[in-house]
Structures are given as C-alpha cells and as structure tokens.
Image 1: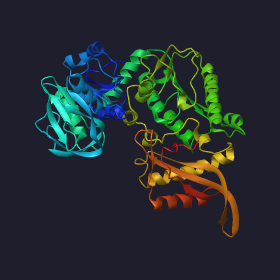
Image 2: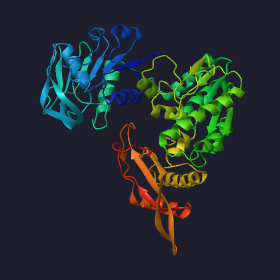
Image 3: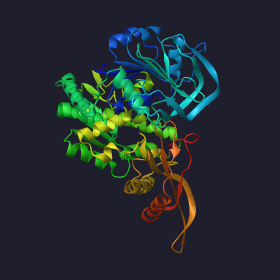
Image 4: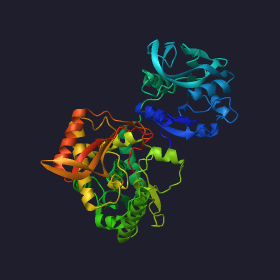
Amino acid sequence: MEIKNESILIMDFGGQYSQLIARRVRECNVYCELKPYKITAEEIKKAGYKGIIFTGGPNSTYDENAPKCDPEIFELGIPVLGICYGAQLMALMLGGKVNSSEVKEYGKTMIECNTSSLIFHSAKTRNVCWMSHTDYISEVPHGFKITAISDDCPVAAMEDITKNLFAMQFHPEVQHTNEGMLYLKNFLYNACGCTAEWKMSSFVTDTIAKLKEKIGDKKVLCALSGGVDSSVAALLVHKAVGKQLTCIFVDHGLLRKDEGDQVESVFRKQFDMNLIRVNAQERFLSKLEGVTEPEKKRKIIGEEFIRVFEDESKKLGKMDYLCQGTIYPDVVESGVGEAAVIKSHHNVGGLPEDIGFEGIIEPLRDLFKDEVRQAGLELGIPEFLVWRQPFPGPGLAIRIMGDITEEKLEILKDADAIMREEFINNGLNKSVNQYFAVLTGIKSVGVMGDGRTYDNTIALRAVTTSDFMTADWARVPFDVLEKISNRIINEVKCVNRIVYDITSKPPATIEWE
C-alpha cells in the first residue's frame, strides 16, 4: 500500500477499539494505517511514518505469550503513543513495572492531569475518561514523568518528552472520554508535526488522477449493486475513464421498493454511465421456489448472481480490469496485503476468478465506511444513495421467513417502504443505524371492519450500533411506531398485525435469517 506524505502507523495488539482509533485519527484529517503488532522497526523506518500508536489488547503484558513489539521501535526517534495495553507494554519494555490491580477500573473515571504536559495542553485539569483495565503501571520507566492520575490508578498517563514517548491508561478514542479528541490532536499535531492534509476533496481528486494513469485506454467492468461502496467505487472510475467502464447491475427482484429504478436513474441519467441493468427476478424466483432454509437461500442467490454476471460479461468481450468496492475494514479483517483477492459480492459469493481480468481496481481500499460516504457526497451522489441503509446481498429473501413468492415480496416491499418513509419524516434515518420490516411467516386472527381476518404479521426491526458486531434495539418513539403500524395495516394488503423487535445483538442477530 502506498504511504501518504503524512501517515500514522497504528499497531494493533488485538484491542476492540483498534479500528475506532484509526477512524478518530482520520477525523483529525491525518491519514493512518492499521498494521499487526509484528511489523518491524526496519519496515516502519522504510515506510516513513510520522508517528506510531499502540492499541489496547486483551492480554496481560507479563503473560508468557503476551504480544510484544520490536524493541528497536523505541530507538527510531518517531513519536509513540501507547493506549491501555499499549501504555503498559511501553512501561514494561522500557524498564517500568506492571502489576495486577486490586481495584479494577471499568467505565467512566475521573482523572486529574498535568496541563503542562504536551498531551494535555489546553485540556481541563479534571475530566472524565473511559477506563477498561485489570492491570496498571506501578512504576514508570527511567526518564518518564506521570502526567495524569485517578483515584485507583497511580499512572493514568505518562510521558518522556525528550524521546517523544507518551502513554495513556484510558481510551481517548471513545466518546465517553470527554476531551479524547483533544488529546489525540495534541499527539498528532504537536508531537508528530502532522498538518492535517488528509481531506476527502483531495482524496477524490488524487484518486481520479491515479486511476486515469493506471487504466490508460483499457476497459473496466464493475458489478454495481447500488450500495454506497460499489456506487462510489464505480463513479470514481467513471470520472477517470468515462465510457471505458461498464457497470453490470443485476436486479434479482429482491431489492427494496423502487430501488432498481432509482439506481438506474442516478447512474444512467445523472452521471451518464455505461450501465447494463439485468432484470432477473423471474430467474431468481424460479430457483428459489419452495426453498425455506435461510442458508440454502443465500447459496442459491450467490450462485445465480455469479452465473448472471458471467453471462452478461461474456457478451462484452475482453475486459481488462474488475472494479470492486473493497473498503479498509475488509482489508484489515481479512489480513490481505497487496494480493488482490476477489471479494464476495454483497456477501453472497465470490465472483469467478477465471473471467480473465489482468487486475483488480479497488479505489476505496484505504477508506472506512464513513469516509466512503464523504467521498460519495464529494462526487455528487444523491444523499438517499449515500446514506442508503445497509442491505444484505440476498436482499429481501432473508427478510421473508419461509419460501419466497412474488406476492410475499410485494407485501414486504410496501411495508418496508412505509417504515423507511416514516423514519425519514421523523428524522430517525441517521440516528438509527439500521431499520427494516420482516415478513414473519406468522398468520394471526384479526378484525377489520365487521369481518374476521387471518393474515400476515409484520415485524419492525431498528437498531443502533457503532460496528454492527453488537447492537441495541432502537428506542423509537411510540407515536412513530403507531403511525407506521396504522399505515401498514391500512395501506398494505394481507397484513393485520405489527410487532416491534426489542432484542439486542447478542443474543439475536440484526437480521432475522
């Protein structure tokens, strides 16, 4: 991966907040990369990083197999900030002492800090921060001074200003640390000398120029889903090489209401992209007929997507590159380095490796999801697409319990559209991270007018989450739920009962299947 002019290395020791640290650094307009803790001092020196951050981690530093960094890193002269486990590791490796604490600190904790410290410059003397540790630094290494304490932690922060080494026992990256972003900015700007050049407008301009140079006069193929990742990736390539890009949009008929038309309208009419829309609903529904098992549904849809994509791509003749919407979390989580591995499309199955591409184009592989959205807005993609709800590759097939029919799809599309419309009308569409309707497969007795009904139950699902690994059910105002319920009952055929899912993840998943 190319190192930007100003880059911070984040060394991952397995902490749950590692990616969050990287996102916070990017929010300070400083480019950063997340790498495993085994990276050597020589590799770091060669890359030219301006600073290093050690993340937290689940281990105790004095355990036999605890992860350790290359000790030569401390001799490079590059500023280092240790966070939580990273702070303890720095202390231990440089001659200090780390012990198990009798009083464990978890959650919001008041610290007192020395505002003459570089890290706490312009900060409040007393502030709330987020602690999460069972060990503590009992003795600082030679040359270090203590810069913050709490009631139960004698070294909440320390520094050796002559060597540009800094450590915090708490987590500055989480929102519960009141002035956490100030502490990070002090490290990035004052210790590392970063000048905040990482801006999305420059990323878009630079990326388009690089794509133009790399692709030249060759042809590019892109599987466009209408999701934000593939949309932004495709548009960056389109801005670089225009009609040399062909996008194939496989509409399997399992999208939300009017979504296929919206995607086609934006990319064909607004951006004049070379777009092939394949209306394949009948093909997919015939393959899914009578199938009720969720995993089988996924596999059928994934396999059929590949077959449709292959059929269409063969009609186009030789294409030189495949464009994908791979983003940075995909790269980090898979551990993939420079090797171009074809990513599973929409989580429904990998595109075939034998189509004969000479290379993969992944213009977003340096970006987190929120940065992809910023890039999309910079490119002029409409907000409704940029902020499009996360949507599984198998689409509505896994939001219909039991077998899939055209009639069930219409019921769910209409109910889901009402829910989404009311969330937008009531300003909930950006504060709630994912929300959708589910056709539960349950029928129940109801009364409508003077008659008895026996019709479908729709479940509404809405969650808040920062990482989609865990999620809490959203406390949607009752009047909004009431409006959605009334509208679905009155406007959608064959539905007589609405329920709201109040289960968190875990124990449930976000999706029902």
